[in-house]
Length: 184
Ligand SMILES: [Cu+2]
Image 1 (cartoon, rainbow, N blue to C red):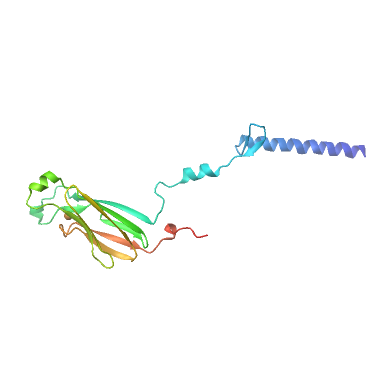
Image 2: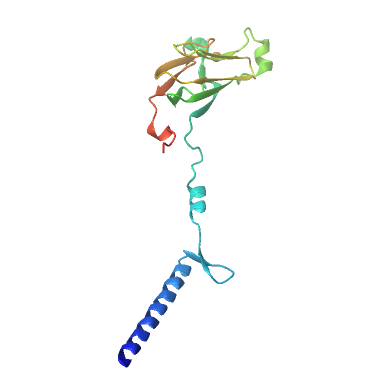
């Protein structure tokens, strides 16, 4: 009987020291942080994780595009018999259902163009059904429009003053799973 008591005491000591070792290990690895009162508390890790993994531009159904009028460098418009005006963005890709906002910037210098034969306006125009967008801006100005991309397909956009070069394509894709709001 005495022999058994000694054995159980030894076992108890073993259990306690294993417990201490486990807590020390947890503190060392940062899983548990000793609180001021001496009790170990679990450290929340999730808050740190979400801030570090947050994407810079999270997927959203609101999509904004900034388009600038630009020129093909070195082009002799007279010799080429074609305007050298282009868009900074020749392609806009969205998902169906997206709320699309387009800013159209006319980068022509007001002073120079005012004295020229024609005022260099630039438009961002879509008239392919069902879309109807027309952002027509004067030199040095900008304008914007917002519409819902509710029809899939490829729709041309163009500047009313600089065809055939100043064109682009709005591509409306079927909704992608990644851009869908999470369903519970
Ligand atoms: Cu133009």
